[in-house]
Image 1 (cartoon, one colour):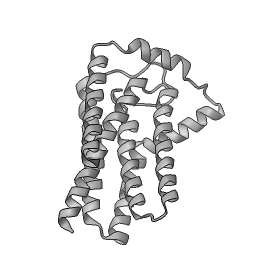
Image 2: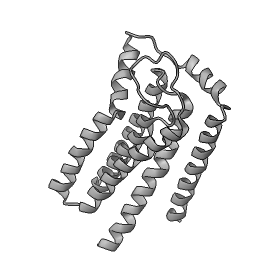
Image 3: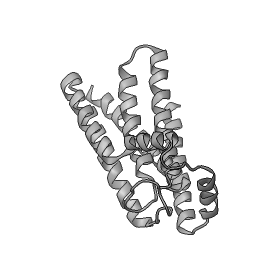
Length: 207
């Protein structure tokens, strides 16, 4: 039952992503995006601006790259879980390559007058997509080791909130349209769930 639920979620994520990509390429979501951007904005040199600028760093390539190396070292030195190392490494690196490929395929320009530096194309949001893959996989392996149910919930909710706020920061700082972030989220969920299902499937056969 759980297996079919996961497959359903993965397929649903892919359908939503393809729909969003098609709508973006046809220019049908620009009015919606601009409406959200107009109502979700921050002023430079304010506490809220500083908060979002700090939060958005957690989804950057530098942070995720360095964080991935540290987590791989942890899995190697403390757990000797080589399967987890392989799935995590391929998952994060593969997600980054997939993001780059889709960006170059869609070639959507970023919103004008963004508040922080951002290079490359806009769709999908790499911070949202790769950040979700990175943090969700780390959360999974942490929760896998934790015994307390309340702590499991605490870890899960904390990571979900962090991922969500990273996505919001990309909109507030005007470096992404809302549909970029939404597409990054749904593709990230489908992709990371696929990676974790693969890990569980391989783990059963290795053990």
